[in-house]
Length: 362
Ligand code: UT7
Image 1 (cartoon, helix red, strand yellow):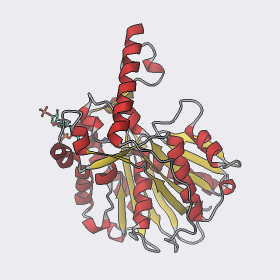
Image 2 (cartoon, rainbow, N blue to C red; image 1 turned 135 degrees about the vertical axis):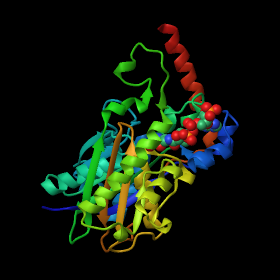
Image 3 (cartoon, rainbow, N blue to C red; image 1 turned 180 degrees about the vertical axis):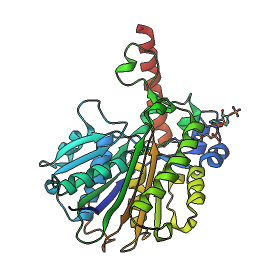
Image 4 (cartoon, rainbow, N blue to C red; image 1 turned 30 degrees about the vertical axis):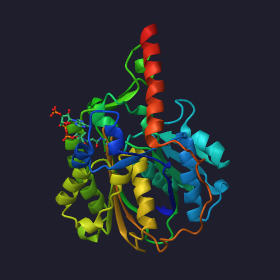
């Protein structure tokens, strides 16, 4: 049975930045609070849709793998903020990217979506039902932020990351995979205002979270999943060359690193620049880690995630010989003159108007 290996990678973050000080100018918060509680300094706000960011990230991953869109036979988009409810964002991406021979599907496992996607990609490649999989994690989570909900509005940002997976040639590839969920804790991290449950109800579109409950569960489940992934790969923690955790909160990451007793030099973080980009966080970090030379031929890379559901997952990957992209894509997002703050204020204005209109007819 073939095992899947990552042969291409890329990411796309929108250009408009919003800093902690920008947020403090429109809500009751401060750079000091956000930095000390989460480690986040700034994040990106998208002026385009999820599918547009996904296409750029996907094009870059294809170029890095030396492939054309038509080489892909299975396209998976991990997202919980897709462009539309129907059809899947994956189908929109398929049309824009021109992967005409690919089956396309979305998966929603919250912030764990990318790791779940790796599991599915590995499975279809092992089963022989697909040879080349494009997996994209993407979120336009800014659409779900609400200035009145300061404990969540400061944590999230937009972006996309992508990988190409193909059958491994040697002993590289996905060496272990562990995923889990606990639906009894669904309400600890949820979005109101979207979905059939909310028809006829006045709740606005926004993320609602029990931060402390999520924090507690994240530390336990990410720690356990990471340990299991290492053990299932017949490795020791000392064999791990780079840990790429879900980029939600530096205090969660520090707790896991202490629990695993890993050297900080073996941990990749970029959440200070992007905040929590949910399903996009690990593929953006993986792509940046490769760009920065943090992964060497044969490196053991440990990915671990946690998110809404609740869901969690981890995978140990042995990298192949190639850590350089085979090619570069010239795909870019259209430019925008708008700042992150201007985009977010405009989005909030539209949402408040929709909320008022909805409340008035109920
Ligand atoms: O991918 C998974 C996604 N979710 C997460 O990873 C979230 C996990 N949880 C967390 O990251 C943390 O729980 C938070 C960063 C959300 C909050 O940190 P905390 O240390 O658990 O703070 P807290 O919720 O206990 O709130 C402490 C205080 C409260 O004030 P009082 O009641 O003590 O007076 C909050 O009202 O901080 C206040 N607060 C804020 N103050 C300034 C909450 N949000 C803010 C804010 N600015 N943005």
